[in-house]
Length: 509
Image (cartoon, rainbow, N blue to C red; front, side, top):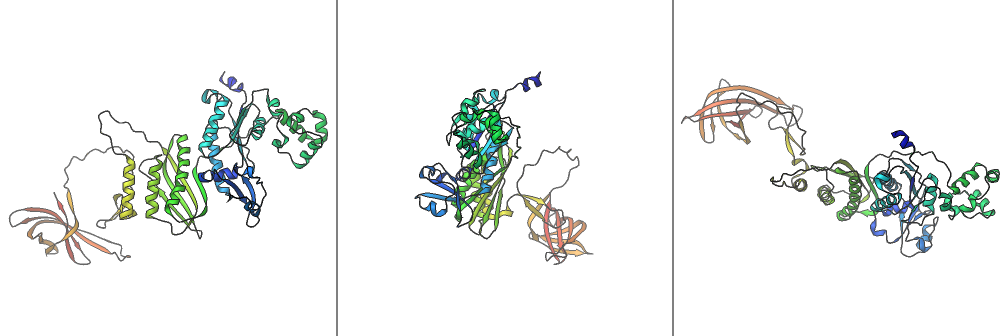
């Protein structure tokens, strides 16, 4: 019964169209230019030509194919070089945004326009009516910094053609089943992407819109234009079938921006990073995720790459926290040349879930600890903040510093039943004068008091790193001694075999 019900669900497609996609992709991370006339130039100087125009430049009469010299004749027009990598990042963000409404998405993009069709059959109970879904889709696209149009139809190609026929920005059209031909009738032939021969033939016949094309007899049209004519007629009538070919985009939190001019000031770089982080947090929040780590890669003049990675204690979507951590990190490790390209990659993590007790005191925010540690690192050094971890060696006081991490819960071991002595390490060790007898300590002076050795256990000898200048060799003794007044002292004496020096390194309790 369930399979039969699924097979009876009527087809329904929503088409999303972003015109002038090269310009939209560049202006997405440049909000200060959205209210200015901008064009995108493609090619190498001096043969650059306009490949895309934003909505503010269209009324000025600028057209695709104009050279830089022709563009310069229009006052107040900003020319930007085309960035294919920024377009790829924007396209990935759009496909991810559309995939929120349905996993079945087909990419039909052209050179200067982003166009995708999403299968929304059976989504009414999740997202409401097709009009509501289309409106929510455009709202999410506007949150990405882009402007688009959307059309909904039960025919795949009809939704695509209707989207091309809508006004340039921000309109929605929903066509009911069976009304495709009437909705398409008034559209010009330009929405069909005709080649020159087809356009010239139809113009000679006096065909100017899809309604006139739909009325042509099918057999006569096929006899003159072949199967291409049949396809055009089916498009005009809203009857052309389609085999849906969904794409499977990978979820990656990446943003990239080619800077218009080299940047040397940290504040200007942070302004760009703020915009990019805003987009990453928006995309992560849509999937109920948080940013666990952020890696900033800077391409500098001379082809040098400078990158830094920030990983706080807990994943978070607090943009101000990320900016503060990046500020401290880049301030402590500044790039050594002007910045040309900024790329940012984030690893997603689970959002923080905290359940507070009614009478439990409120704990300090983890973000404060991250900022404090970052400030301490900028003062004392990158490798001097963290937790001490012993090295796998017998060298005295051998340890390394690792970043603070929250270890996974381990099964608790049974506590030891036999009591063990504890030692208080002396840092730094204190020099001691030792008297030996038969190569064993017999007496020593410690803190202006003389002790006679009752028992001495050892020696335990260790040495290593003969290949380095830091050659070391030690002889350790555990000693029980008494002072003249009867005071007992249990301690650890170490002899430096290379320098023939004795030191008190620890006291046993």
